[in-house]
Length: 353
Image: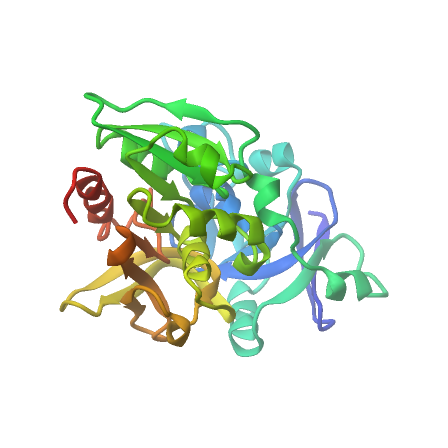
């Protein structure tokens, strides 16, 4: 077994063993708490520029299933306690090690992932490097910043996915790093989905006269996307809009709000979100390091809050026939508590709210 190291930007060194690609990689180290869904995690463009640590101790037991990919693999590295080299699943096509090698992603296993999670929770997200030799100088690690995240993951040109069954509506999805299951959820509700790059102007998007506009998830600092924020400003009120994750944050910025970086973010499949207009608390899937500052909301009404830290999880914009959520109602591996939001979006396109 080849030794490999995870070195944090504060100089802390963890010795483990190598798997995946033979490469050195620097990224922002984050943890996710999901017990399953590692395929969707590895192929979620929202993890662009990040080294992902899984808190669940055994990863890879059902192998890799390409049909379940959410998008392109954009992680910078992968950290696990133990990886399964003999997966068992009738849909499995390869193991985790093979996948990481094919994608050029270095992995490290055999280290105490729970201890590292505690460090991140205490001190906040920090940069790290996965390497085969401990560097003497950590300047590159400390200076690392995720930049140009959305331009790096958006589609290169527009394309269309047809509705499953009878077509009812035309939806334009603006791709900031969209997960494929957002498209699937719209398709099975009778929507033709036109996916367009994040570089499209509001005029280009509206010229197709869509019945609704979907603003996708995506990576990076939302405030960096000044062009996209300006386009959303122009689109508000012109067609029903549904925003997820980064789409939620960008809409809030377009409406005059402010975003902030969280200490260690929300990443996992068990985040409780309370509907402030009702009595329900939903269990949600999340992956984000930034949040909308509740007190900065000038237009719209806060609809959902995180039951743990009270951060904003959703905003309704009745004056614009739009709504957005911070969590992922399309979560492929679950929970499915909030998939009804896609039905709400479809109802808005049909003239109801």
